[in-house]
Figure 1 (cartoon, rainbow, N blue to C red):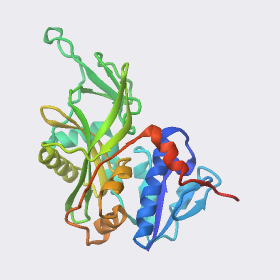
Figure 2 (figure 1 turned 45 degrees about the vertical axis):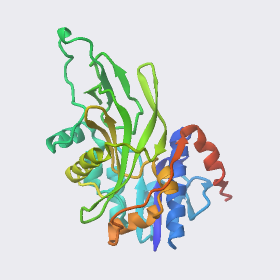
Figure 3 (figure 1 turned 60 degrees about the vertical axis):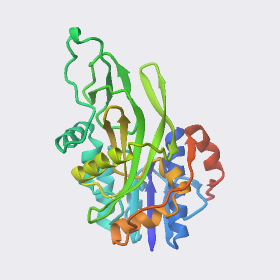
Figure 4 (figure 1 turned 90 degrees about the vertical axis):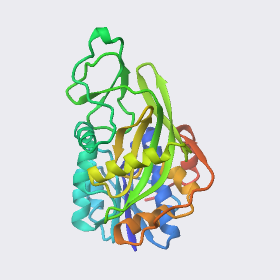
Length: 316
């Protein structure tokens, strides 16, 4: 099977850790599909990886045209706000191995997503539209972009003031975790790993620095129950991930309707091939459980050396 992996940040050479994370995810997926005997295509401005065949782009506009390929199936990884539009283009030309445009649109809008999860009974960090009364003491809140990736643009503050494209939620103390899973076309939920997110808190800001994969917690069943409920409520399919803050309850704080950076670690501790699971979720025959052995910790600062081992310059 010919599979297109369209990873936006690495294809456009956006720079910084965003590009490094994207290229590491691309390499992980491409190698997995290749090990399973599939042909892999991917767009790029110049750098190549150690698996698959590059499609050279000359401009940013070429990314959309690449989605109109002769591939048998395609997997898109793009900024949450762009995902729905790009998925619509992908689905017009080939089989989409990820979430539907509608599910991606709902997950990308943090306000609508939070409301949908709350309606389904999933514990969430509650939306706040006014500060708590002074007599209740000092409270902290999380202000974040209504549409954004991960911890980008997120700040923790005692004020509820936010911009027109931001939302404010209540701050909850707890352990920052993510749950990575697969959902088949028929809706079968397959847990992969629970991961600990390495978060740097500096001033009012917070930034994702890496992951411990997996993170073994006695409250795993509790987390998986809420992740399963959330996936059903949002109509997620294929590979997806949900970020939780584990305190008194597992509060869902962000949903990624696409492959996440955790696959870098998952591919190293899971016996099954992530590529085969993704195909099984779409076409049938997905495994009913996975085998995870060992632990892998990676940090964003390590991704540069990780990518350098795989990258080459594409000569034109």
